[in-house]
Image (cartoon, rainbow, N blue to C red; front, side, top):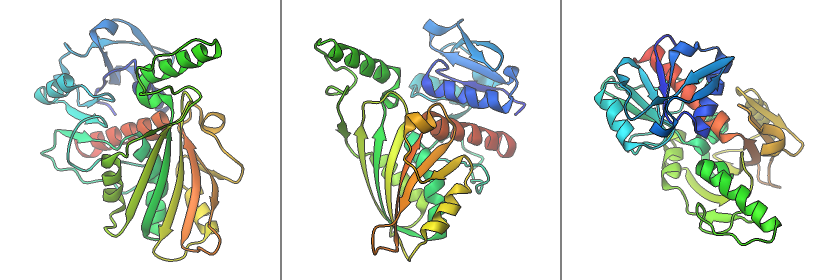
Length: 316
């Protein structure tokens, strides 16, 4: 990547994960431009062995950049990027077009040269897709049930801060007033409405019109991480051993028999752990497993960097 890549909201959780990924790749500091709100302009952000200074994203001219990676919704910045000829990449934009996901070694997508922006797969979808696409290619999936467990970081820094404040308050017998969540999240579990866009995106990626999907989402009182309980039914019988070998061969995926947790196994990790891969008794066409990972790193950061690499090499 020799052309300049701009990253907005650069002090946020997702942007920091993207920068960690680029630093691990050895991307030169002068290939990056870091943007943030006016109140953060001038501050320094650690990158590799040095620092990069934040620029005001409401004032900076993006015409000299090839790509803007925008990990948080920002209508004004989106409009400015498109007006100034900078290709916009974001999982937070509202578009009816299919989401984009690029995994290492996967088939490269086709993008029309008239495109000026691209919506990426969200954090949870990006975590699930490598395993689901591999299994669907082995045998078509006809039924998918997923229970998603979201940590506080899905609500950003405000969610993490609220969980911390509530935990401290309750342990000290103080009352709490929820602001980010509708109810108390500390020491609690809160359901969330089904994400219609996530269900639609899953259907597009699996490409099987006969496949039905059910998703349930729970907000859980942990600060970071993501977990999912996945149940699949295939068009024909599958082997647990063959499925395990297939998943273990995926980039940045580990399959293990012992229990795994997002904090103990995937804290600040760009990889994913799958455990409890098994079949229900006398149901040879079914499969279920438990997945844990860091959604901002394995999910979003990996996809942002892979998509940016693909666009700069093959499209822009």
